[in-house]
Length: 247
Image (cartoon, rainbow, N blue to C red; front, side):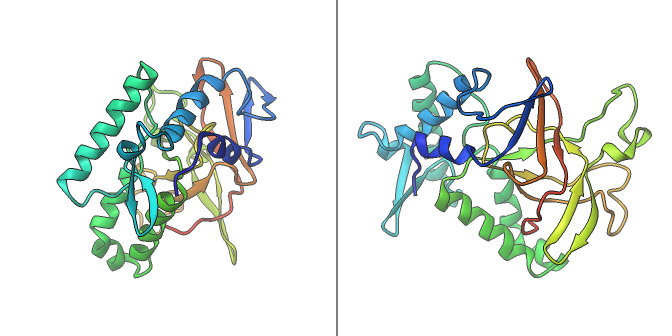
């Protein structure tokens, strides 16, 4: 599946909570703070439907078309395809735009390559990461990553600060886990989902630590908030997020 730019925009109208300087943004796709980035990202989707670029931006497999940027690379030629697609895209928009292609989906390719390591931890993990990658590819999802934990006072080490800010599991239910805390996410406003990476800190060496959690988070999940300040992104708050399949 290859989405159009309008389908990409429609997917962002998912009830996500985006706040700028304390004011709720009702529709991020038409807000002046976001339309420039939305226009550029939507352009990437639209190029895959145009005759001039379709063969460079997409590939055919099993009767369907998929983004070359999201294809897990299993051959050297796949990297060349990605390079050419990014090149024509940046030439088309006549500028530079980061966090638009495969640079964050790639973080899921590595666990897939070492699925035997994941399966040694839990036999379900290998199949889960494979399913996540297929879903991104088949639904043409804009997937990014929740970067790092908010450090607050950067003169202090993370472990010397309030641990309540660190993302953590607070409860497990039959429906999944409940998370609280925060992560910095540079594309919380315009991505479909994020790979929430495990916290690396004083709790990472503890077995079954509540602070070592990784999962896929939908940006429009109920309870999630993305508070921003104009000119400066603040942490993406994760509260009562419904659980996704663990990576």
